[in-house]
Image (tube, rainbow, N blue to C red; front, side):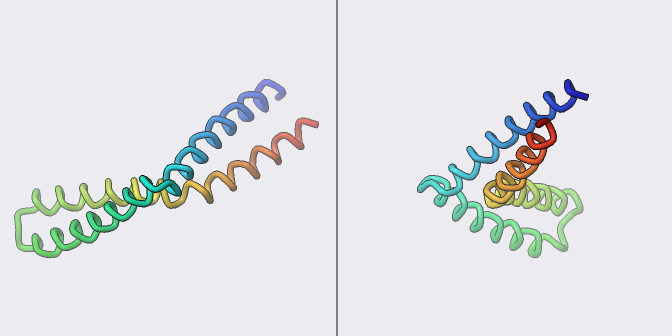
Length: 99
């Protein structure tokens, strides 16, 4: 049980570091530029999908995959701060169980 807690502790610390790094990126000047560009690209992706409704399935699937990828990156950056907070709470709860 102690080994499992130590492993979980390490994994949470690594996850927290990643989320904090992503949150810092999102809040930086470059991150803000990236988020703005992603929002524009997502809007363009939606327009592409709408205009491709009569296109072959392959084109529509390709456009949807591109939209999905851009949304994933956008969500990762915009949710990073909240995810860091949640992970930090989980880590603190784990540390309090170890005591």
